[in-house]
Length: 300
Image (cartoon, rainbow, N blue to C red):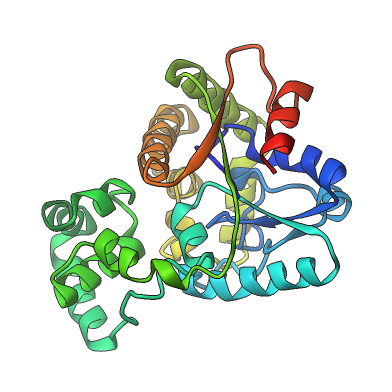
């Protein structure tokens, strides 16, 4: 497992390891599973996907909904396929909940209940998802920290679990720890906060230069509603407003960078409870440099 916050260089390191360790990459990214969300998710190109043997990308249309559970099924199938070919599976991504699900750590969580879900959706429609997130923060602060305040799906799902069980999600996860079906190693990339934030800002600017707004405009022209779960992701919801003429690109750009930095902070908090072997980088380093690759290969 290669983990770390957004813009830390996980994919660059994984692609080097593919060549050194005869590996294949299973992308654990909650947005790269959606077709058409390419620029704003830093999705590898088609050529890179073929060269470095990526899996679990473009699993769903942008009008569909991915969950940690459905992703885990696809990821486990991909891992089995890679192992059966005698190669090393590299589970790579910053979506900690998806990694947890793939490793069987969420098996102790109750299945979603339609009646509970409908009731919570009705309350959210009246009060707003931010209010619901505030309730979650009072009931399970650790889980709330890992969820964006505007992430309706994950906020309501977490609230459902906590209200039904009366327990924090981390406690329920620990009940299912024995179900983990893999013996693996966690490798993480860690930057000083200021440098990570600089990388995030640079990445946001690069995405915008590379046609992120045009990507969103194309999705809207194809009939993808801005209310779809995929379109509520950081950056996409802001650019939907630009595409609708409700805001300007200059006005939303600082907010996209700010929300991405906040997301990175939540990722770092989430990964702190994992047994990660961290590789520290400084400004001037590259995540695919020989020194970094050598440290990761030694851990493997």
